[in-house]
Amino acid sequence: MQIGRMVYDQIDIVNKLIESINISGNSVTNSRRRIIAEIVRKEGLFTSEELAKSLPNIGRATVYRTLRLLYEQGSVCRINIVDDHSYYTLSSSDHHHHTVCKKCNKIDEINLIGLEKSIKQFEKNINSEILSHNLEIYIICSDCA
Ligand SMILES: [Zn+2]
Ligand SMILES: [Zn+2]
Ligand SMILES: [Zn+2]
Image (cartoon, rainbow, N blue to C red; front, side, top):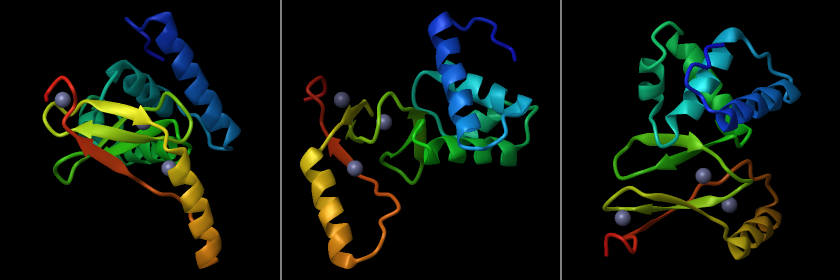
């Protein structure tokens, strides 16, 4: 794996992500290691296209599959911003939602305990398993107000 200018904290995160893929029973190929290292290095929002572009030697399908896997296991957040583009970023905590500033695109992680309870109750009411849910709250942040 090319770790080049990565700082120790980042190497730590890369190792944790690799471990979580291992635990989920998926194989960690060399390509996957490089994709994970690139995601950690990005330190912010990126689209799947941008990620694929910064890894020209790895097939797009492999990049997208790995990104999807990381998203499904909660290691990466997917955030829908203003347009139709989905942006991704490393997740720094367990299940959460986001506020998105409509002016500067600043993203913050938020926890909405009441909402999670309501969704659990709703799941019982409809007698169907909820697989996942998605919610972004769009704001004008205090810096932009
Ligand atoms: Zn997040
Ligand atoms: Zn803002
Ligand atoms: Zn939630």
